[in-house]
Image 1: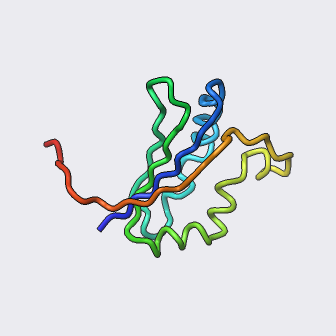
Image 2: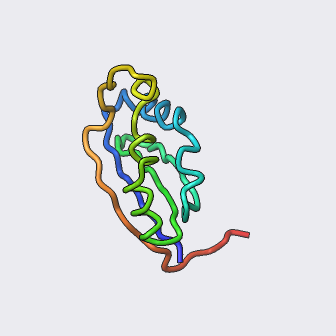
Length: 109
């Protein structure tokens, strides 16, 4: 059973591109984590200002293993911080994590 974790991040209307840039700068940071199955950054296509970070995990233990790992802390530091620079101003003004499992659907094939 796949576990889906969604981080709903609210950003000011003019900051979405910066959020996308920061995610692109750390692309692949979680790919080798045990139990990780996939990632998507979803950009709103209407007036909403909440972006969704959707990750898929084998199970809750895999997700918690990543959250509690040095890789999580490292992946959530900016490129400037990893190079010894200053911490940039946060882009998000609010964030919450939602947890789901698949209850049905279609492959679309």
